[in-house]
Length: 470
Image (cartoon, rainbow, N blue to C red; front, top):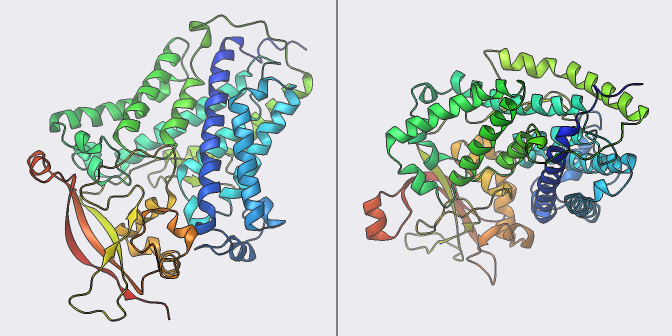
């Protein structure tokens, strides 16, 4: 059987970069799971996995944890995923036969799928499905035993197209500030997790903010179409996507969303523009048949995401099947004009009175101390900090987990306290906890010079009255 149409040797370097980069993202994701799960979804966590598994059948949330769950077993799965990811970053996938490399990528995907499907609120972010969809396609991309299959390369572009084009459409259909080019007057200040340069981005001239928004529309609504044109135009389009994502990396913390988008973009670059392709053997028959079958499956499953793109009621970050094989993406259809933050405080005093001394908990990434410059954490994902941002938007986002979170602070739970930057009660837990809602805004240049503060905050209202363990 003639396979010349099936593979494209010119993309051997693109495949290498894509696979190493994707394995790096997997590594970060598994480290996040291993280091944070006990407080969030562990047996004694805020949303325990065992209680969730009793409510949800395997067909709704396929996961190895339906067979057995313990914190020790979860940690074993997470650290196994991290070790396997590190091996693939180092090139282990190219040092073994094709079938073994595919099994390694399939195990990574299955382990992370198992985690996401029991992660509940903490794993409800679009980049979880994005990693799983890209990871599923990576299983069938091959290794040095064969040239990259054209069909899988096409599906990677189709994924990148949906990520970018979906994000562009949701903006144009959503907030009016995207259409009048003013969203960046607010976004750098109100985004979920500002970075160390966000203050400076916020204070760029407003005409430049409008140029940024216009350039974003071009990159997300025009450039993705060019991914399907002949080379070198497709490579240039992929390069523009990568450059735009690097700009976003500098301006804020968006977990691994920007990095996995960059990795996807690099898979569309023609490697022959950089180096000549080595001689690669033709693919075995079983591999070609499997790739064709997977391509047909993804094409069939793409109907709902494609229909979603065309819908006036376009949904962001939605999975259409429990395996997260083909999903809908999008971000910031609405941009907040005002930033609210929850400030958590505790006291050792048994009775609350006008002179009660309250001490504030500090989180790793979300704004708290007005004099502390936001730090860079992405691609690492601070799940609790992100959900605190959502809780400040509406108490509905905190309905299931905020009470258990406060309870664990009152108990002095070590796993929960490890998720925080500063515990003001190192010797014994507080008697009472309260939560207050503040409006935060970036200081002006003059305020920054006079006070040394990056933020200015104003009290809004009480979010949780002083609470103690019953």
